[in-house]
Length: 123
Image 1 (cartoon, rainbow, N blue to C red):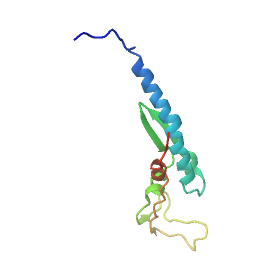
Image 2: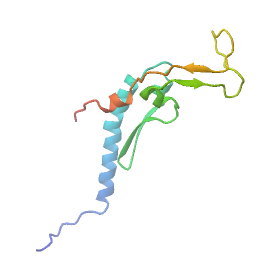
Image 3: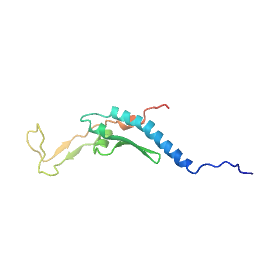
Image 4: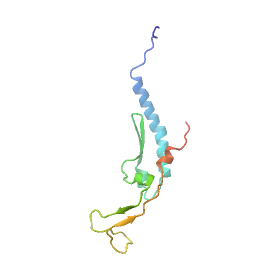
């Protein structure tokens, strides 16, 4: 069987990959990011402001880069003990006296990324 004389530009793959990454970032990533910022529980606004969307090698990532409690808000926390790190006791405004430990009851999940991800989108 004879081969056709059609040649594909070797750089076509790179152009296609770049176009897919741009589409993922600009269309899907921005939509998920916008929804996540709308859904997130806003106490101080720090978590909402820390959310980012980035696409590298056709892999889209949406989440927080620098907010250490982002997953605790999304998934919740189980009951845990809070101990002082640098002092001998814990003290906060409104407390009657310093304490050596606090038995925290945990927090319920307040999902914001999963609902944003699973929102039905049309092209």
